[in-house]
Image 1 (cartoon, rainbow over the protein chains, first blue to last red):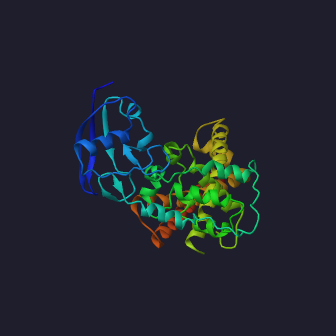
Image 2: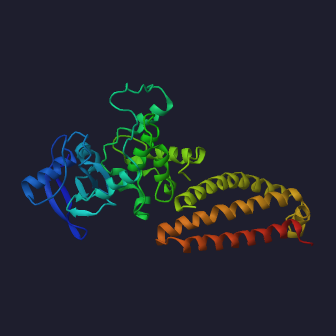
Image 3: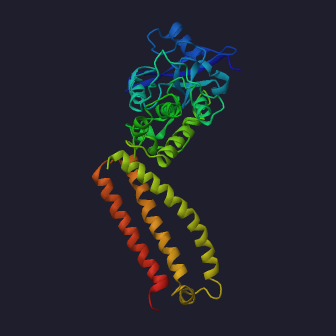
Length: 238
Length: 116
């Protein structure tokens, strides 16, 4: 293990440059630890985001040596075998400053994909009984643990080619709601995720699935949306 | 037809035509192997293919599947690499489809229909 890490960090906005820092190498050090050390010891004006530090909040994703990752759960030993780290903001999102991106477009697309649950039952009715072994419930379980970190969105070539493309996270969310037996906005949602800004633009490269830190498969969800739209046309749907 | 509806249908047609093409390529390879037996000259091969309704029907389906599949893919490539959108992409894909269909039908006619 080297004693010092050579760390290059993006400084600036869309225009900017990488600035090099030397950071002590420690045992069990995460990439977020490295960024935090730089901000607290070397460059107090460095901007970055984090909150939970345990892989739950999805706020600390950055591009580490060219690959989008959640930095709080990424050990330096895994990504910097030669002691060199290059840390940049996530791709496909506008840079606000340094490592902080504007994620409003990312979450606006969740709204465009009708990512909000809409039920019909009131609080006076009994809980819906959804069998844990049913096919639809299993499909929900497979995609529900998304933390909204945008690693998939930053890794998606189609997002970079088609800026209006909803992206893997929003479509994964839509797929979980399409399979939610309590939801009543299925037709409206399937109409919203159709077309070349929706699931039909996906090339099935599966970068999202490869990079998802939670091990989810948005690719499978998007394929499910395509199948559902093809097999089960609805009144508002293609 | 809305744009989303059109895109969903185009995706569906491209998927179906891909299935046809996957099968057609395999059959095409078999036909090549069979057709060259007993002589490799153009006249000898055409002597075996001309007048064959089976060969003509198969290659007609092959050409139609190509004319459906390739222009949809080309439209996607143009949209994603050049940033084109709207009517000019539809026109480009349509013209390309007609070119493929025309050239393909001429080729089919040359192999099975044209008098020697």
